[in-house]
Each structure stands twice: as structure tokens, then as C-alpha cells.
Length: 160
Length: 160
Length: 160
Length: 160
Image (tube, rainbow over all chains, first blue to last red; front, side):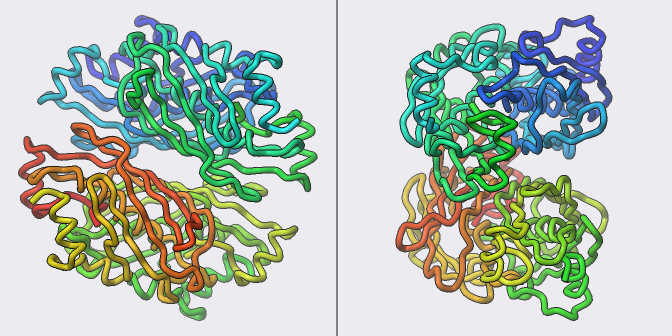
């Protein structure tokens, strides 16, 4: 199954969402090749001690949207892992923000390295943050053995 | 209450931990001026679709540890917000990893900008990732009014 | 003089380019509000020990293009400084690459923080790298005095 | 020749420094395994339009110090390239700053990915900026052929 097929199956609910997505209350909203959107409704259980949503929620959305955007361009049998993630926070998020959408898009998918970017918006198009990421891609060779251990889809921390 | 007093009270359980920490199962392990350690036991509910812990958990720990390290150097009445966060993931985390510790330390606390760094380790000292952050500091002036809205302690997404 | 007027004067050669631009052989190619393009022809004097252009050239172009894009949205009397810069390198640059263009665009220009992004391309549209930056903005208040020392335009390391 | 031997030869002047180092006036000050220090005396030819040193100089020093720190841990025949670089600027640098030292140290050198960090200080120990980087390592396999094209030492933009 290619990355795109896998993500579409997950988006249609044919494959279960990952535990972290259930824990944090987010899910896949849109999937196409090179672009994946996650959605979430911020709630009090996402809050930090000072009455706004903790930065960890935005990071989880960014990591998911960008990792999956990379994954959506990978054929079956090719894995990836997130090497690094950089997030800018522009505005606080709270329960009055309403549903947010995190749109991840690939910038470059090469032989061994892929990069992607993402933006986090509310339904009015207001921007709350943006991010970029670097992923490493495993195309067979020695990567193959590692992938067997990690499962068929990806390899790392960053996969949604 | 200074940042250090606030964090120590939270560390001793006299102040409630933030909702996100209860949701994700992490908490303050150590607090001193300029250095705050968070701890977490990774579990299946932190997993991504491919059988390792989602990168969002590490990001939440990094954001907390570094934001609180900055906060620990701020006097009462001074707020801060996380402007950006950069995370490197070095190894996958799983349920066999056991308890992880995320140690955040300030690098620079200036008049308007503070920076900090953090490392994520298991109990054997094995390194799973590292991060840096930039925070903006609000020392009275117009920052004061904003802070009244946001609560007494900080201002942003990144606060513990 | 607003940032846009200043940059246009520099682009037309009415104001001298900065010393670093003469040293490294780059200059302003296009200026509009929120978008500034720098150009450079990579040469052997930009090389690292292994026969490709040193990453410092791309960084200098990115820093210039993004800092100036922010500057182009600031009115007269408002300064800025680059707080942080994140660069992804996608392909090596060499003397056969020919003229490269570095296009910087603002993402967010707020009261105290601005962010921007940039891409580095050759004349065939091939992507060599991309970057994001965070700038701090000084709108009068105590920022005013600092700016007097630093000159009329900006405040920091990142200004082109 | 291992990375350490190569860097030590360059540090002793037995191998010529790279063109970029002559252009920008910096050089190797110290080399040991996992730690490389570059030095530079900031001058007016490094300036941006607003009378401080352009951020590109600090970036070039950071890229060199961290890339070489990674290189210093690589055996002969193993190449690397800089994938990404993140820099925080803390204070403006000027001609009165005097000699600055940029100390790069590896954090993690794995099979395919290495990370490093660096700090930029004046001779009084004052901190002007800090950085982290991610490098990709080429240990034979297909990397070998690429390396033949790129020269004996490294592979990318970031190598000093």
C-alpha cells in the first residue's frame, strides 16, 4: 500500500487512527498527493497552566500534517522518519478559537531527504503558527531491515 | 509569585498541574533557577500509526521544559511567550524506553528575548532528541495589559 | 523614509549597497511590499574546501531577503532585528549553477514579532534551499533610543 | 585521511584554507575530536546597511564550526553534507567587538545523521549567538560514488 492509499484509508476511517490522535482529539481532514490537512477543536484539556492551549498541541498537528504530506508521496515499501521540526507560534489558541486546520505540504522529496511546510489556521483563515520539517527517507537497501521492525508504513517519531 | 516559586509550588503538587500534563501523562521532576526537568513514562496511548511514540510528545516535553526554564528566571509580574521551537529527533521512543527525562536550561535571558535548550534522555542517559527555543519576555509596559488577560504567569502557547 | 522606499533606493543604486553585499557579490534584484529578491552569481571565491559553495553564502542571501521583506512592510522610524534563522540546504551550489535568486516573503508582521520565508532558486526554477526567520520589531518606546545608535533603518545582525 | 587529520592539517596551514574563509577573513583556531573552533575579527567589510555585522558572517562561522566538528569524527572515506542549520542571534556584532570565537561541538553522530551545536563568543566570554545543525553522513554504498564527484572530504554546502 502506498503512503497515499494508507492515508486515504485512515481518512475514511477504514484504518484506525493512531492512539495519539484519539488522545489529543485530532484527525485527518483532507489527503492528496503532497498535501495533508489535520483538524482539531481546541479544548480545556489541551491547556497549559496559564489558560491557553499548550504548544504541544500545535507541534503534534504540525508533525502529523508534514510527516503525512511526505508519506503521501512515497510508494509502498518506502519508509521515512522525522529528523527535525521547527515551529513558529504567532497567536495564542484557546477554546474560543474553534476548529483549527493544519495544512502540511511537501517542499522537496528527494532520494534520501524530504522537506515540508505547514500552516495552522482557524476557520476564518487567521494564522496561528507555521512550521517546516526535515524527514529522512528509507528506500530499500539497509533501510529495509529497520523498516521491518518498525512496521510497513514509516519509521519514526514524526509519522502521524 | 516569581516564576521559580510558581514552578516549585507546582512541582510539590501545591498548585495543580496543567490539563495538558494530565492528558499526556507528564509532570515536573526538578526545578531550579534556569533549569527545569520534566518526566514522562511513554505508553501506547502516545503512539503514532507505526508503532512508536508520536513526535508530539517529545515536542510537548521540550516546550514545557524550556518554557519553564525561562520562566524560572523571571520575577513576579513578568510574562513570557514561546515564539519558536526547534526539535531534533535522534531515536524512536517506545514503551520499552521507560521513563524519559527532559532537561531544559536557559542559554540567554535578556530584556526582551530569552533562549533555552533541552535534551531528552532515558534513565540510562541515552539521548533521544534535543531542542532549542526562543521566548519573548513582557516586562511591564504594554505587555502588562496583555498579561492581565492571559493570567498572572505567562502569555503564550509555550508556557509549561 | 519607509523600509520600502529605502530598499527601492538601494535597489536603484541611489543608496550604496552594504559592504557585505560587495564582499560576497550579491545584490537586490526586486523589491515590493512584503517581498524582496536578492541575486548572486556563485563563484570559486564562495567555495568550501570540498569544491562546492559554502553554506554561508546561502545563509547570507536568506538572511538578507527575509530581513528586507520584513523591512519593506515597516513605516519610517520603526526598526527590526533578526532573532533567529533556519535554513534547509537541498542541493549543492557550484559555479555551473549560474545566477541564483533568493526570494523572501513575509508570513506575519505583528506588533512585536514578524516572520518570513524564502526560497533559493536557479534561473531554471530548480530549488537549492529554503528558510524561515523570526524578527523582532521596535515601534518607538525604548526601542527608539537603541535605533538612534544603530542608524535609521534597522537594528540588527540580519538586516541586509 | 580521516576528518580529524584533514582539519588538523588545515589548522596548521599545511592544506590551504577554503576560498570562503579567505574571502570572509575567518580560520580554524582549534581542532579536536568532536570539537572545532573558528575565529574571526569582524570588520567593516562584514557590515550590513545599518552599521552592524551582517548575519551571514555568524552563519558562515556556525556552519563551518559545526560541519567541521561532525567531520572530525568521521573516518577516511566517509562524507557528510549539511541538511539544515538553525541560528539564534543574541547581540549585534561590530568592529568594537574584537575577535570572536565560534565553538562547534557534536551532539550525536549516528549511522546516517549527525547533529551538532555551536556558540559564538567574544574574548571576554560574552555570547553573541548559538546554533544547531543536522548533517547527513555517507558511509560508502551509493554515497561513495557521489563523493567521488564532490571531492575527497565531504559532500555539501555546509562543509567549511
